[in-house]
Image 1 (tube, rainbow, N blue to C red):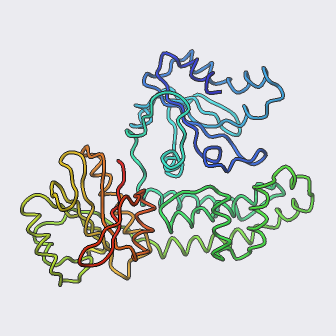
Image 2: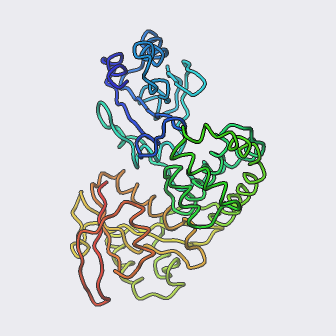
Length: 395
């Protein structure tokens, strides 16, 4: 498939990506699609679009016994149209057919998967030009999923795909709690381990179906079971609703002024000796601070330190993430992840290639957060406060 697509678009400099279940190791013939995204440097011509439109059928006719060509889904369009959302020629392959359109919607879950487990199959890697979704983007996507579950999941038929609603809800809850997107099977197993589903037997069946779809499609009693899932889906949707209501409120991230420094508002409640150090570095132009506000109050704080040898920075290349903290009553809701992701993105936009930080070895919560953000330990050190890890992330 990749060779065929690249051949048709040979003059357009295509970048072909595989993402989703096939890229994350969660593909199962019988219940999975093969998700691809093709972005071109040059716009797609009408003639190319017509060839691409029927490519799945053309390849299947050439290899009648190949069950995979018809499973390919995704969009083929120019990189500029993908980034701007401007109308352009788009070839869309879907479950129910294919069409030529003017726009392509690539949701935040898919975009995050493109970054976390996407595989470049052909061409130049252009992901550095694509904005990565923020936590708020993912939260909005969860709200859309919940609306779909409410609208369509409460009445299930005998299709075994009805069990998929339970996996979808599991993945949404996982995303709200971690700021990440994982495979549906893994999400189902995680939800079972955490006792989240009101009907664990139903979710366990959904996971089993993911592992052996062709086997269980032959069991007629499962179709009867599927038709009775409506109440379970509605109850599990209530769990997701509660998660949405108890995770994050609307927030705003703003740069802190000099007047904000003495308070060290997010972490110290107005009393902190380190505030004077922060203030001095801010005046010297080597420290920049950002605050995440909820209802007009700072609830999380994160700094960037530049050109300061004791922070292991390198001018123009390496910055240091500092002063990462969230008020106790707002922790484990995603605010820390949101502001850290914002600051990391800011460093990348400014051309830095690396970002580093230090964290106490026994700070399990912070270590978990930094792991989710993509940091890795490169050294263990010790200072007056005890042993700590030096961590870094490539941008």
